[in-house]
Amino acid sequence: MKARAIHLVVNGEQASGEVMPRMLLSDFIRDDLALTGTHVGCEQGACGACTVLLNGRAVRSCLTFAVQADGASITTIEGIAGPDGELHPVQQALRDRHGLQCGFCTPGVVVTACALLRDDPQPTTQAIREGLSGNLCRCTGYQSIIEAIEQAAAVGASTSADGTVA
Amino acid sequence: MKPSPFDYHAPTQLSEAIGLLSELGDEAKLLSGGQSLVPLMNMRLARPEHVVDLNRVTGLSDLSVDQDRVRVGAMVRHRQLERSAELVAANPLVAAAASLIAHFQIRERGTIGGSLAHADPSAELPLVACLLDADIEAQGPSGVRRLTGSEFFTSVFTTQLDESEVLTGVAFRHLDPAEGWAFEEVARRHGDFAIVATAATTLFGEDGRYAAAGLAIAGVGAVPQRLDAISLVGELPSDRLWRSVAAEASSRISPQGDIHATAEDRHDLARTLIIRSLSRATQRAKGGDPR
Ligand SMILES: Cc1cc2nc3c(=O)[nH]c(=O)nc-3n(C[C@H](O)[C@H](O)[C@H](O)COP(=O)(O)OP(=O)(O)OC[C@H]3O[C@@H](n4cnc5c(N)ncnc54)[C@H](O)[C@@H]3O)c2cc1C
Ligand code: FES
Ligand code: FES
Image 1 (tube, protein in one colour):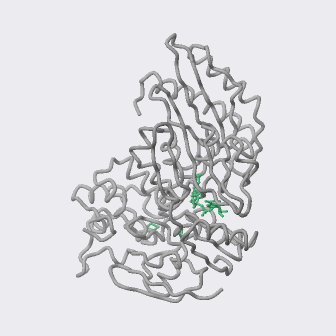
Image 2 (image 1 turned 120 degrees about the vertical axis):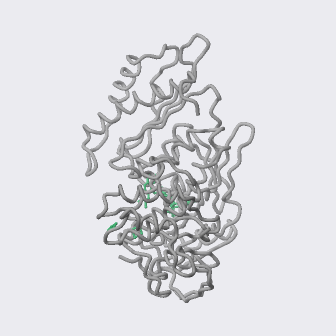
Image 3 (image 1 turned 30 degrees about the vertical axis):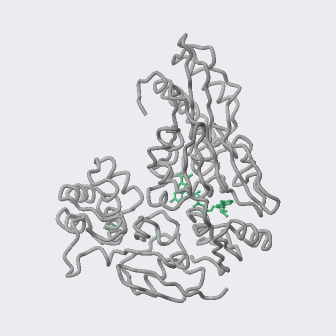
């Protein structure tokens, strides 16, 4: 059970680490890379707080081992806003529509919405509801999140296939 | 919780993966999408000493449609099935079943090989593999074995696979362009495992009577079950016919109650879903509900 070296790209920058095989990608991101925006709620795939983009695909970082991400490109919530901190349209819309309260679910919601709008830039309300079904929010009642994603779609928010934000 | 420690292996060749499995025996677990295995490891319900990751093995991720079959590599993700236009054209039932699994972030990782090998009694893809009697391919130290979807599942979370075998792919028949199909399930919330699920196919003759039909059900026993002997063939479609088929089917299943639903609820759901899926498959065969 020896540690392994991994090299990956996180939010556009090279990152590396020495990880034990059992280390979850979520823990590597939070504890080793100190990117604590990725939240961990359940560690069983149910809550969606830990969602990140792995090679552009929205996945549960709590159900992936860090060793598996060797050579991969990852986008976390810290990589979504513009370089000067200007909010991504999804973030701006959540702010405008009061799509968050405590904010625990928000990183997962934002990353999920970016992937959703990339795959389906003009989703129906039903498609937004289905796309969000894997993200639990205990505060908002979801309605304001759905409205925010509708607003983001209306202003044409989407991400390119490699997960970089357009 | 966190998984207990293990050694990690990331072979790039199938032969290497099989070699590792035969060498390490029951200390080893294959890792595909990890969407069932990793939650079990996080809860320490599974504590493999060795994890053999299939994600870097070449040749397991192809989805191809040829003359009469759809071939799906074991590492094809549920999301690929759901979004493949080629698959939707050749066999919309498989694509529809995949789209009902969990949430899309889980479907981005979860694989058909993992889903069939895991053999959850209420999972969608095992039900379709059973109904369509899919051709399942496994490879082990002594070579390739072909297994059939109607016999593959032997008990809860148990299949005909040996410990040292890798499920490498599965082939489904095409649905006839005139064939109707349906996949219906009831779950507590969108994305949850189904409590009961049913799948059906129907084909009509020129006389307007059923020429062929298939029906299978999951969530009412240890494994998905084909209700073959229940015959629609030769009959004219009607609500009354579907009701009598549902009543007969319901007398042949003996679901157990558990935390999710009582045995009686499962019986009721089975009847309702059978009627719903026969009606939907009939509607689709009659062109009332295009693919
Ligand atoms: C929140 C949540 C909700 C879910 N809801 C559903 C649902 O509604 N319906 C549903 O069907 N599933 C559901 N799942 C499970 C999901 O479908 C998994 O993708 C699937 O059950 C297993 O596929 P996997 O590729 O992730 O396999 P893994 O988790 O990697 O492996 C599962 C098991 O199969 C073995 N295995 C994997 N690949 C192979 C292979 N090629 N050959 C031999 N053995 C192999 C592994 O050793 C392990 O024992 C859900 C999961 C989560 C986390
Ligand atoms: S922490 Fe990963 S889904 Fe809840
Ligand atoms: S804002 Fe509190 S959990 Fe969603």
